[in-house]
Image (cartoon, rainbow, N blue to C red; front, side, top):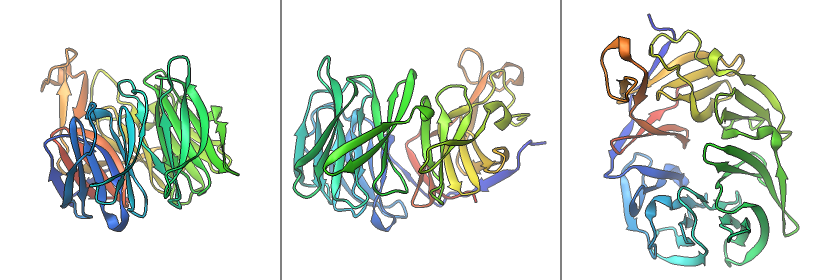
Length: 352
């Protein structure tokens, strides 16, 4: 008998690509923008995952796998942050309006641009030269003039990610140094200058998202630590749960290696949190006690058991761990989006 209640999610829409999507960006009216690993392509999709247009990225001559995509919430501008430049494109992705050239990022490093909630400014990070820090800059989204600059962390160590908060004047900036450490900083633009506050209480945690109420946000552990919830705007830890308690007594996937959180946690609504596990499972936690109340079973997701040598096995006595075909899990436009190892983008209703 299964330990957890199973919530089956039928697929609403599905689209297959020849390469894996690496960035999925919301646009107005339920549309989304995407780019892909190892391909110089931007694709715009309708709310039903139908292709609206596809464009080759202009002026890019470095390895495309590191390009990071973002867009303004009004759909007016697209930003492509590549290895050696930042390019601002028009809404159709056909015209480069502005380019910021910079030194080369290292493999797996860099940062997507961030458009402020009022779409008046664009925030981005430039890699520092040797013995210098990376640098945060803010430009006017209409004139493309740099209006503020701020030194960050040591160069060629971090991948950066901007996060919107319920306070339109406050941004969170996450800096991750691979599996070594992760930092969180709070940013504000005051009187033409950048104010940066380090948040040591969130160190070595990985940002999830905010609850719809805006009063708290969830973070995943960077290693084997607990899941944590922080209040906002105080940013005080108000709840946590050990991973052993989340997976306690799990019977559906018996293996020598215990399952654990795979860096991704999301508020689905104010009462439920979705956890992505190392096995590729989706567990739904009750916000009150942070215990698993159900396992979400999206249509089309399959699991493979592996032996200690990393080879697939069907022998229950030699199962070391499992892996599903899920690559990325996102909540976009109040839908659950999954990318899979066979190049699919699938959408589902939220499990609420």
